Image (tube, rainbow, N blue to C red):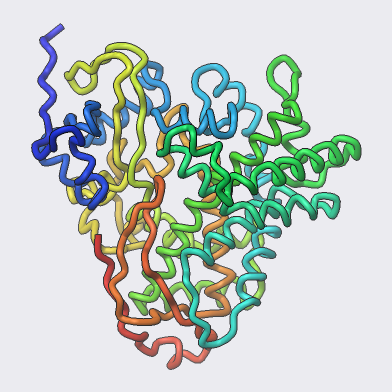
Length: 459
């Protein structure tokens, strides 16, 4: 075996804190710049060395080809301590068992059954607006994503209390999860508003699980599926495991879809042609009614908007930890080392995507773009054994939100303030994004009228 290649150290490390100042001030720019120093580089977070894979081939090896040599990154260990051994935090055999047991929740047939609940939540949001309202888009989309996951989890009247409780505390759960991933363990013992809200939410979910078990009826929701799924030995999930997985689904089903939907409305406000094409498709396919699961396959342009938002604005960082000493791209990495990658940097790299700064849904039209994306350069949901199990749920949820709201309203930029691509936990969100609600018109001249001057995004 040839001698291992040297891993280059990224310049600019500060004494004691390493590259933390650069990562804290401009994380997206910093991560995007690392490819200039090599396909695999070493940075320092405090005194700790961290490896960063910047080339798709190495990222694919990390996530897929040699996935057996890695566990989840350090952030997942903190999530494990925060909420218990849930799917998004476990590794190895416990993860394989839980993934097999959670998979029925995301089968295509089940996914289609959630669309009606998603439409109901999106319609509530659209009904709450009036012409010329100014909405703060990211919080509104966060509330909508919370309502969508809550309604998908709990459909029956018996679960109405749990749905209401999850909608009330969903943002608190998400906040506590984010803070737990970056702060010392003592944070969970502090009497913060979020920490105080979690025990009552857990209690309500436990009561609902017990009621569903006693009733023994399949309501077509996620909770019913979780109660019926079993592993290879015929053993089902315990009530405690189901409670923890429900909390985990709330964490993973809110932040990502809210960020992607927010970016889509930002981009529609920037580009009247994209907005016109979306409206034409919605008017043709839906003719004013909410979308069904069958309609979603016909909303081709809507789906491309979602995919392009996932391309341009994915999660900004992911990580794995080596189980043992490994070779990655000819470099040797020691055991118990953190290896990071950035979906954002990969998917905005001109080597892998032409004109990546341009928001172009047509890059996903197979008739206009025959070029296949390089393996490892498309990782909005990670990849391999730890790929997000809810990828199709997220895409469906986002498409429904866009279709329902854009069928009734146009969102115009409220002012000329610059919109910033800001990192929030692992997501990238537009801030500040305040938009004016305007009624849709089917009059062609009105629909094609130029929008207000839209602010440009900065990073």
